[in-house]
Length: 317
Image 1 (cartoon, rainbow, N blue to C red):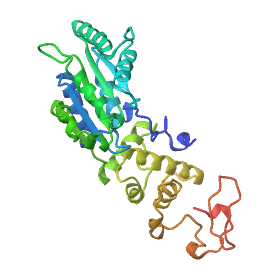
Image 2: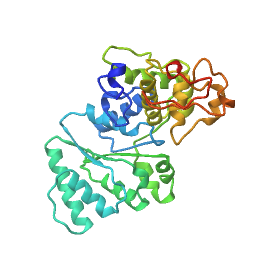
Image 3: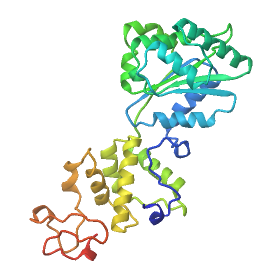
Image 4: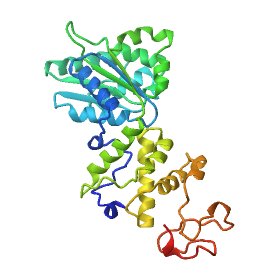
């Protein structure tokens, strides 16, 4: 809707994990570097944790984008599985013909497949997303998968990605052997305020047709950061809504007030900041908080609800 208005080739703040928009903040770049090192050096086990929306999946997609054709990838996203179902899911995702049977028979078929891939000089990477949902018994089964190896190297590289609950789950006493197998564990923290500004400019620069970056006024980042706390998914949500608000008002710059309106339309509101930011209104009406009518926004071309002092739509900011 607003892409042409702002000169974008595409929406810059979609929440899909498009590796093209990967923002190499120091923490995200380090997570990607550690993943690449673990996979290329066949370290076996990697665990990446982070809060909801921290960018774990985007880092994962950036990793896959950097791997060459010598890597076969198995991505498991349904983690409400028992041990046998997990093995079947791996075989099916890798398009391995198999005969149903006991868990031991399924493991044997998986092992044969991995040995074939090793002979072909192929690296097989298993990525399990939302791994915090796995039960301790299934995590133990994944540990056993890491035992599939030759005398010199692992047959299967394993990456677990999950929310902080995964980190807590791995502290359980029965998972002591699992913890000892983890070669790399990296926790992905939210962006700082400066990184948040860099993240927004980075995504706009990729989506922009004309190279324009300064669409968001500096003060709008105060609201954006207080709302998102540096979480990329929430940054995307707020910026997308703010750009839609700017399009409705036909404003090329996103102000602090527009950003506040955008985030206050979400389920995660910042009502406590309302006193610090003037609500969008015309120059003749400076008393919104005590107004009995309370101006509110309609769509372009629709009649606005205003007080008597503020009845002209063209005066609205």
